[in-house]
Length: 361
View 1 (tube, rainbow, N blue to C red):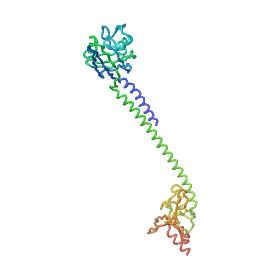
View 2: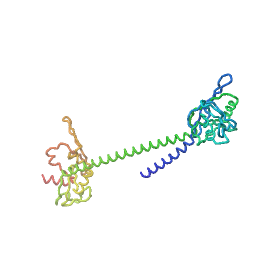
View 3: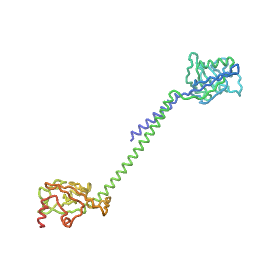
View 4: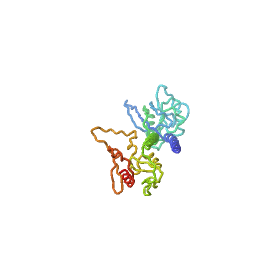
């Protein structure tokens, strides 16, 4: 159990380190909608999921007129890079990558009130984009678009075309699935662990309950067995008793009976040393030879309830006993005649029975 807890703690520490590291590679696309106001008062709109939010950019919407920086298209420097712009006008700065950091470009536009910053890539990169890092500029929406698209928009603005841009949040891409997969694995791990612990607790509690019930049952049966043993016939062997014959022996200790030894006669008429049979009966409560249940035979078992209707014959338990060269059935609880009651105690030594009958005759 100790090693199990250590392993669990190690896995949790690994997961806690992997999830934030994987989350750092998640990037979100931006939906870019561009409206061009043509000379004939018509509007041409272009729409694409072609932008990528910067790593430190708020995942929010932004919209406004597209404004280019004066002179240097990269938007680097300080002061009024974008000229005089009305505070009531929502505008988006369009700058080219290069000459300074992304944070410097974004902060320069933010100081003049830009609602967002769009950085287009360097020449020769086509419409390729990268995931901008700008940890020093976190308040302004910032995205990157490809060079071809950015150059086209910048050319239109320089030619006097009014261009309005709408930026909306797209969807997560890249290794983001790894992050969600790690979250899923973490959740599945905790669920499986909780289910395993619950199952272990249930099995342990059920086993303890079964063991306790078994101990109580064994204790009760031993108490019943003591009552049954007290009702069995006990006698002391005397000189001349046929059981003292060398061929007669106790089936438990496999030793011959001797004069002066105390023997116990079971309900099935099998005879054993008293010191041998009593420990056996306390543990097993059956005859070692014929498996006869002494508790049922003597009617001292509390849980045994026999319900016999007047119209049905009584149930009779019969056991098969080997004697001499023949097999015969002995009923344990069948009604007996007066003659049978006088002869209900038989012994497993047939010669002793014949001599006893001759003596009575």
